[in-house]
Image (cartoon, rainbow over all chains, first blue to last red; front, side, top):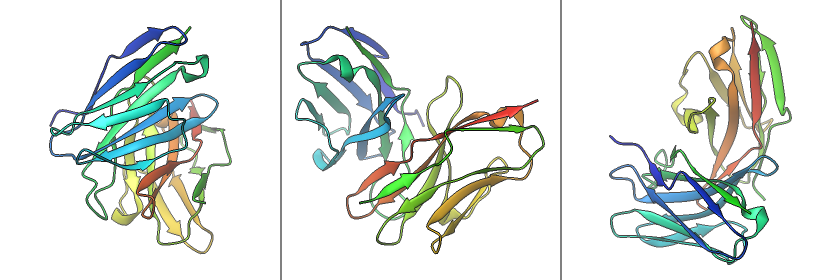
Length: 115
Length: 109
């Protein structure tokens, strides 16, 4: 099976702009989660989508949003970018349907730099 | 609130020495616990999960509900074990993962 893919791999934006990141899960996985990884804060959960519905959300401002399509692909959007949004954004997929199916498979990440 | 702590940011051991990476959690229920590993220039990947009671690459981890711990152990460390290790808890109520801050393991020759 192909692994989780994320595009683009690297992105440079300026403050105030918006950005959209994309994630394609492993075939058959219906759950997609997004994380922000920074040296100072580590891995922080953004949100999780399952069957096109946001099932859970972390403690991030409303500038961070996402969606999931019927083929389970997911996008994450950050509006009005701030310098502090510079981070590695990781996407992870899982079956997400019950005990023993929540183990997550991670993509390589998108490195976002805000200048 | 659900929380995962890993007290050591960096752990250095010599090749062939035993290694133990500590993980403690707070969770009001039956936790599902995992260890993830990130080798240099590679993506984060699952190492092992407590429900499988498996040994992967010589690593084992035992869930101790009394001490709320899930420490990762290996009797003889290898240089290729050098990586960042994250302990994670799956919150069945919130349906999301909570990751610890990670421990960087450095195995010296």
